[in-house]
Image 1: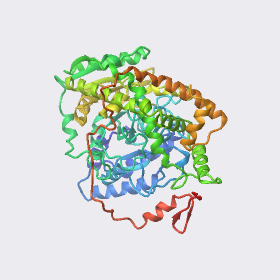
Image 2: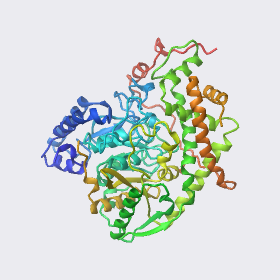
Image 3: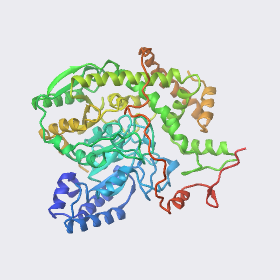
Image 4: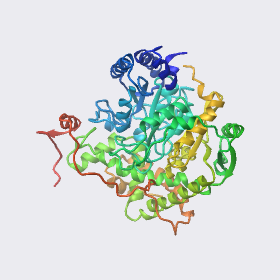
Length: 484
Length: 95
């Protein structure tokens, strides 16, 4: 087995037994990046020198028999909308092409304190706006399972980097599915934590009422190890909640006998790829064979999820992205007066999708339309949220496909924004309600991955991880690696 | 249908320059998206309160004191500023 194919828990074990050093592990990953990233393009910035320096530090600690975190010495890639001290952070946008943050995001600080080794910053749809990573200003990422297909998005660089062995794990961010959908398309495990579970200080904001940061890993055990490090109150993010963070590894030891699994009938829609549907149904049967009791439930308002999401998200984007004005940081265009500096800088430096969303959001928030659009969407959000929370009183988790389709061809939907938005159809329920949800691989169709989504109660990541881990203990999908 | 004139007005509010071609394309695309969004009217929300956030947290406060600043921070922040003068951010005349 190649070192770059290891999971975190396998590598951590070898590091502790001194069978491999962090420098060796890091070199194997850096070498892999050099070999495959020209074709995959998962990375916007690579940080080999920093990585090797961090790895040497960890090796010293291991040599001195110091107690280290399970993430110590493990190569990680960070999505490029999370700020890193002294390392370029671009959001895959021209406007931040040369932006070097003067601080670390809280999650980055926590990873550094745990001794994780940062190998680089990963590609995304510009500012997170998209479901394919094609909206990156620096070029699309390719799906390692089929390089003519998209890796999903917006955390497509992170997902592709893990699948192709260019890191052992990565950080992603999820607003309307940006961790789960690329995890599904690249056959990795991607967890969207509950809104409020993980600090967003240092995440360049897109939709403040839904953005979260979460782990993307090769299996569920790894996801629980990373969440353990990321989770918890942060004074610098007032939306994080107080209270103890449970020990997630405890949940992984439990079985799922008698656990109630809800399957919403609305999530098996007409027009869905029948092979995807079959894979999901087989996964549900597998959970039943492991002792879970499966129950059909109904979430009639989920059909309004995409419409609701595509009012709230552009509205918040139009506000959050107003800070990119060519004055404080980033790119700036010369013009005759202040107003023209703004309009020229933004007009020439933002990509098409970013501009489209800012325009849509400016419209839905503008005088005369606010109540009909934004306020209405926030009310529908209440209806969707209450409905799913009520369902979660009856069942422990809800199962759904991650995506209705298989990874699509690069370029095939780039000029069809509405079609692209509908990629999120199974994603928005968890996003709007702020629920934890994971996508794990549950099959391959003609060599392309299918993702299974498991949603849980707010702050009950433990049960979500438990169900996902039981499934992975009984299946081999997560152990597949693409041939590159 | 959103007219080109309306798109121009929104573009001004959003502080974004567009070419003629972009304006026409946006007028079509935004109209299609808004048509789809019309769907929300089917939901009866007459007795529903809006959801702005989902944590249930309210009025989170902390002591109003500055963190110990890294003396290099000011230089690092200014390094990212496109136009500056004497340690200040330079802006075109506002009036």
